Image (cartoon, rainbow, N blue to C red; front, side, top):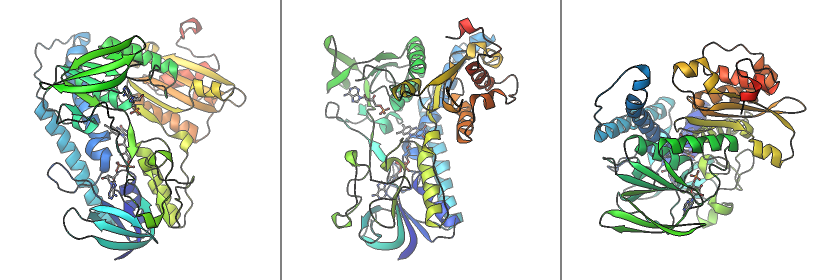
Length: 476
Ligand code: FAD
Ligand code: AMP
């Protein structure tokens, strides 16, 4: 069979690329290997099946459960007993995933994208060998190929996965009851989100993080606030704690971790290994295809997502850049448009990152540490949610908005938020940065009152030393 475009991988990078190609009139096929628990093929990749969507479904459910106890009291509402039904919570999550993946299959059909279940392997000259889950391999070819094979959890020798006792992030989204004590190796984005879910549902949660800096990629003023708030919530977070060994004994996990004071034992009921993700590129291309990989197994691409091979592009988690669904989707659309002869660009400087904890953490652009490191002179403005009327009405006063702008031009270089709905608020900062705004542009924009967004407005005004609702002395 011959196509204009073959896409390998139907995650948020690949399925978006395939749909955009079809919209642009290209005859497109998407080959994907994902199978659900029953072995049925499903599109959507990690994001829909074992990542963004199921984790957010459980974060919402567990926050709802916790709020019944935590917030009710503040609002003058006492709930004497809330009954937790974990299997029902999991079923709700599974239904959301099923609805969304069915939706992608429907979008493929509506746009005329052919979808083939099976493993794709790139061969020379834009040929792809497709090995179905059952049956004989076939070879298809196209004028262009887009590789979008995503990523998978990294494993470590110190903690091999075992049944539902030592699990990766996928396993931790499937437990049907609340373990008494959950250990998590890695206090990164995924470890913190999964830890939050199980803590809110009643587990004691201990995170062991090898680095001695908490959330090193986050602006450290925000990270310090986060660490304080997470510890207050009851998350046990040990930094500088390298897990050396694990052993399953009578259904529990006994592990050893090393910190600057020596080796310590810890016993937990369940353990989540959340130490990062690696690109899925093993066996993706035949040796004859000679696809160039970078260190770490990422597919080598240029700024336009072109690989070392003519007509072959690569996008999403399998290539350099942040491992985020929206980054992969944007690359997918841009590559489709380039193939169709249009021009398209992805602005890697304005891609937001979010950690969906409570409060949420969201940022775009440079941190204070990065600006100092590069010797860039900047001004900073800060506004705490404690001074926001809406945040007070919501009983969500933790956190702040911080705006960093170039000292010479006032162009916004970074916005960092920790607080309720930070994941939504950050979009305003992304738009501002995409449009090359100055902090004064934001400061002179009219924001509705009372809203959490006003904290961004005030932080931008604070860059110029003219925030209204906070006295200068109280800013830090
Ligand atoms: P994937 O989604 O991994 O999809 C790749 C697809 O390719 C898969 O279906 C795979 O089976 C298939 N495939 C691989 N190799 C082959 C082959 N040779 N042949 C055929 N098919 C193949 N990101 C966010 O932006 N926001 C979040 O809130 C968020 N939360 C997350 C929570 C968790 C628990 C996890 C694990 C990840 C989360 N992520 C989040 C990251 C996000 O899931 C990834 O960035 C995103 O899925 C990457 O998209 P992708 O299309 O590149 O790859
Ligand atoms: P992320 O890359 O955001 O998913 O975070 C993964 C985290 O796991 C990183 O901060 C790593 O430092 C941490 N990590 C990796 N290996 C270990 C280990 N053996 N013990 C504890 N933490 C680890």
